[in-house]
Length: 171
Image (cartoon, rainbow, N blue to C red; front, side, top):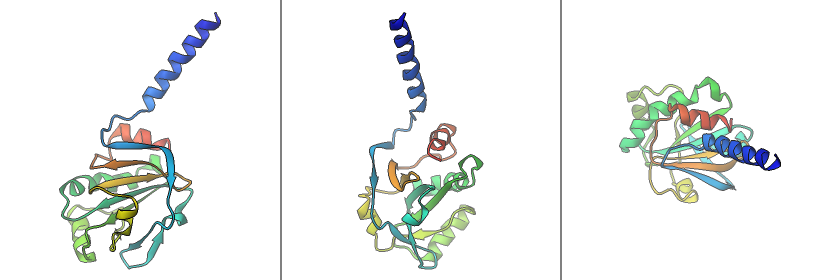
């Protein structure tokens, strides 16, 4: 009887863990969440934004550029994600690393009808180096403690129900 109970427990726990896994090929989960010092970038008014000021929130840093076709494709769904009522503790920072001026970024947002996100910049590309980015778009996820727990290399549809269900676990 004890063996049967152990077997049922093991089978049940296997299924519950399988449901938590997300089938997104370009999602890389971090086994040991990483902490970074001085994650600082600029807003559209050239004011410094320090990521450590947002501890207690689920944070997404999305690195993009206006010339990037996959960035253009995913930005509207990222805009929708910011106002998803199921993720009320989420703050998204779309950070332009294309060394472009504010007017070009504003035109990009206007063309795509982006209304829920603000524009941020990593003009000297210090964050791109700090996070060892290999290309754009790259999206980095930070838990409430300010630790990186996952990253997306490439684009996805941020409206995907499976993705949103997975992300809610960290909200």
